[in-house]
Length: 337
Image (cartoon, rainbow, N blue to C red; front, side, top):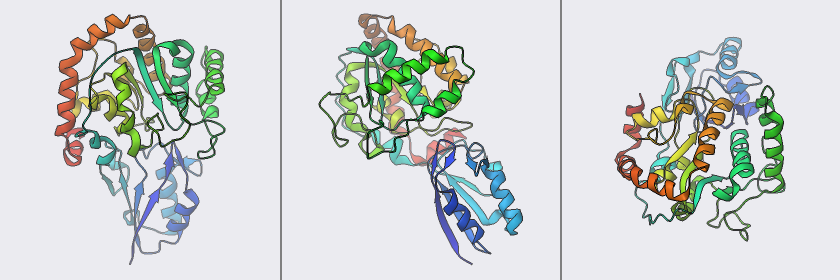
């Protein structure tokens, strides 16, 4: 009997290497396989050949006479429902989030912009939020958005179709569509106009270079974070959430439902004293709509008012830095349970 490891590659709700995965399962025999799920999707939300993922595997097991306990899963989703399959192990990829804890960061706030939003790879939710901010608050924002249709190093998939499907029943769908078109026409957006390559300190955000843009955080009041995993029951704070914490910057976060609630379980404090965080009870388009309402309200504040807010927030921001430094990959998992 062999023990096999297989990495399941997932983007949004799609298994990228599903043919290879099914080939391994159909050849399993009496061997065991540990499926390492790429990052942190909700296993109940991803699809296998258009079918709910775990249902699809259960069907394969039944047809191939494979015992379910021959297949185990290792996932980074800290709130994955482990009852969904006989063998599910949760681990935390500490390098994504915790590597910010001991960085030597020069924090010297000179707030010049209301917002920052820093995007590397496009997703439908990032496209929606960035398009709205570009259309309505461009002059008050630092925006980077690297992926675009003519970048040969990335697939020309901005997830426009996904976005349009999400807007299908929205009354203001045409307005948002126009905003998206305006953003796309101006892509790529860099933090400095003359930067055109991905290995400079300008906003291309692969996790291992994610903290190179921290000096820009000195110039923004709030970071609009667009996390990667957001559909269903999921929680995986990454470098995107670590940046504002490490730089003592407040944040509004698009992620899965109750992301902020889970951050509080880890010991972090958030910002409901200064704006509504009721968006945390929602996911998808509803979450974005509520976030954008708060962004619109903050946009009406003067820079002086935001600086006063920032002074009031300092105890919270300093607490969050100390909390980040206290976490380990082991106690993160224990605290979220």
